[in-house]
Image (cartoon, rainbow, N blue to C red):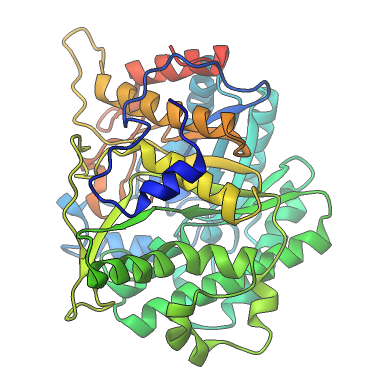
Length: 468
Ligand code: FCB
C-alpha cells in the first residue's frame, strides 16, 4: 500500500498505530529513476591513516584517540585502513562494484596543518590524485570539507567555541576549492553538526570531549555560522559549484503519549534536527531553543547562516525515542524503543523513519534535492573458512531502507542518489575498530580487503536500478 503524507500525519500521534508501510517492505515496486546516483561514503580520519605523513598537522581526533580510556581497546586512527597508500585498490573496488559516486572528506589539518595560514601542498596533492582517479573511473566525487577532524591548533584557539572559526573555515574552503573546484562539482560543507555539538561539546565522548548545555549550543551555532560563511565564500569565489551540507536527521518520537514526553520530543527534535535545518533553510531557529541561542546570536548571524543550497545530504540510521527527564542536561533522556531488529551498535532498524524524513523535507523544506549521504549498519561479520562474508542482515537492512527511498521518490521526494556508509570497515570513532560498517571487510593486521555479500548485492542494484 502506498503511504500518503496525509495518512502518515494522521497516524503520527498514535504510538501504537500500525505503520501503513511495514519496516520490511517487499521489493516489488518499479526501479529507481534514470540517473540516480549510487555510491559509498567515507571520512578522512576514519580511513586514511598516515597521520604524520607529508606534513599533516595533528587533529583533535589524534589528540583524543591517544587519550587513555577515550576509545574502545585504545584504538587510534594512526593507520586506520591505510587508505592514504591503498586508495588505488579501494577505488578499483568502487569501480568494479558498479558505483557512480563517492563521498569522501578532506582532512583540514592535511591541507592547513595549523588550521589557518600556510598551505601544505602535499596535502592538496593527495586529494588532487584522488579526484583525478575518481574521474578517470567515471565516479562522481562528493567532497565534504569537515568530517570532524578539526586541526588541533584551532582547538587550542577555542575551536567551535571561537567565532573566528567562521572565517577560518571559509578560508580553508576557498583553499580547497581553488585547487579542486575545476573538477569536483559537489561540495558539502559539514558532516553532522548536531553530532559534533552533542558528543564533542555537550555530553562528551567524542573529540574534543567538552561538556555542558551552553557548550553544546555555542558549538552548534558556530558550526551553522561557519557553514554559512563557507557557502557564501564558495558561491562568490567559484560560481557553478553545487553546494550543500550533510545533516544527521532522525524523526523523534515520545516514549509515552503524555504531555511531558511529547514536549521532550519537541525539544529534542528542535535541538537535533531543526536547529540545523531551520536556520540554513528558513533563516530562523526553532522557538524552543531561542533562550539558549539568543545570548550567542550576533546581529548578522542569521543572514549569514541562511544560504541557498543546491542539495542536502541526509545521513539516516534510525529514529529516536525520547522521554522527559527533569534532571538531564536538556530535560530529556533516551526512551525505550520497541523495534524488532537492532544492529551491532544497538541502534534500532527502522527503515520507515527514512521515508518519514524524506517526506518531511519534501513537505516542510521546499523539496530541495536530497542525497542520502549515509545509511548502513554495523553487524558482527564472520569470515568463513573459504574467505567469504555473508552479511545477510546488512543486505536486508539496505534493501529495506532502499525500498523506502524508492517509495519516497514515487511520492514526489526529490532524492537524487544513495551513498552507503561505508565503503570500508573503518575507525568508528569512540568504538574504534570494534564496529564494522563496511560493504568491504578490512582485515586490519594485513589490510586485506574482502568484499562482503552486501557489496555485490548493492553493486547489482546500482547497475540495474532495481532491488534484487
Ligand atoms: C555517522 C558518521 C560516520 C559514521 C556513521 C556510523 O554519524 O557521520 O562517520 O561514524 O555515523
